[in-house]
Length: 476
Image (cartoon, rainbow, N blue to C red; front, side, top):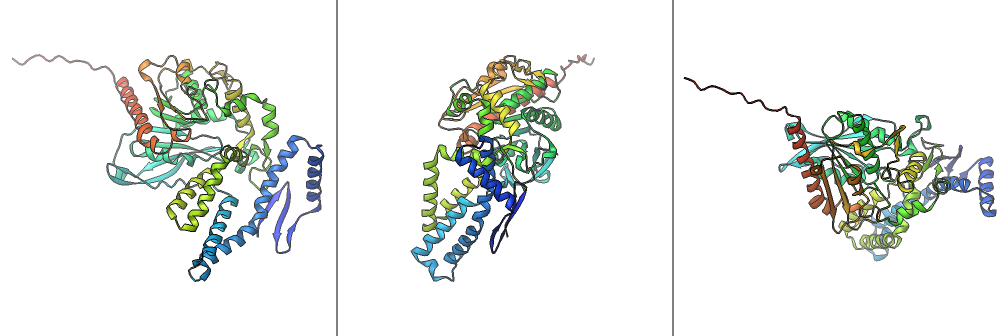
């Protein structure tokens, strides 16, 4: 049985089919009629879109059950059909249908162990700090195996831009062997009840400050893509009050610090439309029975649709290849496809206030590079940062954040000592390759690690009191 609630009215799948109350059907017909005649507002049409998305998933479920049964018949070792070309093709088609119609849940981190000095070390993932919209994860290495290590503490701030924090699985794996790693695990706005209140860019900055204070002094923070702006603002806010917990270093990777430099298609779209257009076109209301029902959000499925259409032919070819690999029995290629799309198609909703404030502050007003960004009534002044080393990393082929956009942070942080400025451009990689993949592991991560180690040594030497020379007279 499939059960879900839409617009405060319940629909249930029974053997006799769909059963809906008359009031709900009347409302649906009214919306459809208004849309057809052009009488419905843009907001009404967008609101109906989320309901249609949920109803489509429910309506397709019976077909998925039948497809799964047919796939098992065509793959069973006891079925003669399984050994025929037709049987293999039908099973492959059912597998592709299952992939393109199922709802992708939050992926698992799949990090159970790491390797230190050639020895496998178990990893325990624990939530060390909980907030309404985010958990702070600690990837704790087993001290009985790893021993007592004085590795730098690193806070990796995951992007809140549609995908789950597990997108940084490769980033985390590369950092764990030589660092004490913490990661922000953002919650899907769809599952956060309305009673918990709003969440905007100011709250995001507050979370970063509080996490840094929780972890303690001499922490190194890494912002991947979107969080680069709030992380820089958070460090500036901490520096303004000389917070003893301000990080020893911050690494900004592929972040939109100043989108006026080498603007991309994404930047131009954000700047060419008024904020009201985004609010009317993409902001939606979460339908019931989701825990966050009635919350205004930027739905993940809308953003995913934008991602897919940017490279639609590539994704269609990938699924065509999947069908061919399934027929041929190429398990390695199938597994590679499944791993990528399990992560890529898993998306989350963003609160409307966070999304709209980010669009306006970062992409339209360019408030941070122009020195007009405000956090909790206080002007964000990056010139206050003096005790935190800065490293920026960009990809040569990045089509999301153009070259120079992240590097702009160095101009803003003008009072950081010259030997604490680091900048690196990785040749031959796009946006995703900046923090994941072979180039990240072999070329980018070693440079980030070297910067963190160098900064850690500097901070320790600066913290030591000056040595006093004691003169001892020679014995007679």
